[in-house]
Image (cartoon, rainbow, N blue to C red; front, side):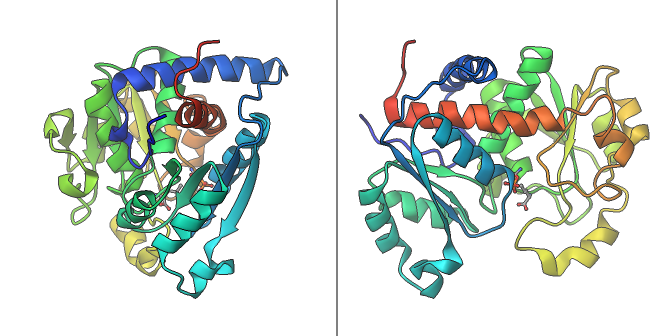
Length: 306
Ligand code: CP
Ligand code: NVA
């Protein structure tokens, strides 16, 4: 089988996502009926974390175990990587011992170098630039709740970070629009976002205007992992970019609210919104499990007919 990696959202076509979502629905349905599905017996997943995680770790560990395989979780500071072993050597060694690797790290160039020296598929579990597994789960959640996302409007309020960049890549593939509002100085950098077709997003200086008429309103923390030194400054700069009830009232009446989590109530989102009736954040988090099981099955077994 051809070796494939999943390093950013645009690594897959619409047709592949369509297939993966069909598999996700099937896998999720079996899971909900307590029916075992174990196509990855004897396969091992290595998880490599250079940053903190709750959802990504639990969803990959539980997912691989449920598929019949096993998992090794590495916190890089505890490994020889933490003492300066070259990344390329780690990739060569680890990929001789396991069948698939997920990495959460800093620059995208790190995961690209790892993948270039890996014999097995590598999955991006978040980098400074992208978070593709998150948006796969988010779009699956949108479709599950509301049907096709083509032609819809997603309002992104806040930082132009890894999650935002990934929404922008997804917009071109799925044919929806993103209305982005960031504070001055935090605007999208299309090259860093990995988008060359900018026709799927529009920038708004006023976050309320970005939310107006949206089908989905979404945001993320003001300070991403690795940027903690900027926290105090960002709290001031992002003050007016909180998703609150007033902003949700401008979106469509059936608009959903999403947040990749962890969230800071009272900062990027008001408690009334994240804990309110339009919020689907818990389904969104759960669906990480189901989409990533479909993803691992696809990278290891290709298309399966069940
Ligand atoms: N959303 C997400 O990736 O969460 P964790 O940082 O907890 O993995
Ligand atoms: N943008 C956030 C996402 C956390 C899941 C970060 O990178 O810290």
